[in-house]
Image (cartoon, rainbow, N blue to C red):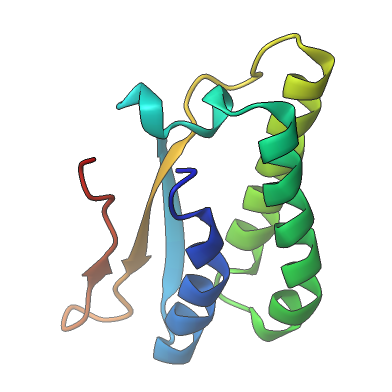
Amino acid sequence: MHQNWFELGDYCLFAEQMGCRVSVNTTNNPPQNAENNLRAEELRKILDAMESESAHIEPQLKLSRVVWLNEVERARILYRSAESKKGPEHSASACCYSISPCDTQRQLTRRPLPI
């Protein structure tokens, strides 16, 4: 989601501290929340910020490292697609983050608020 993409790094670090894995579910509804509706300039800002943040976050992640790297790559793909004006390669692009429980006692889910 373009409203909260900037939270993913801290969210992954939070999950890491809890000893839990993060998962990202992509959706295409509601369409106004989907990153694939952003212009290339906006997607470039997101990608630049995520790539910059990666230097700090990536070394600290073990359990959710692949999730973080996949989301940076997804931002890269969306940007390149928008830049080439071919349209998005993936129609699903609004995200809902969740932390998978490490045991049956803990679970935290992050769901976007309706706008």
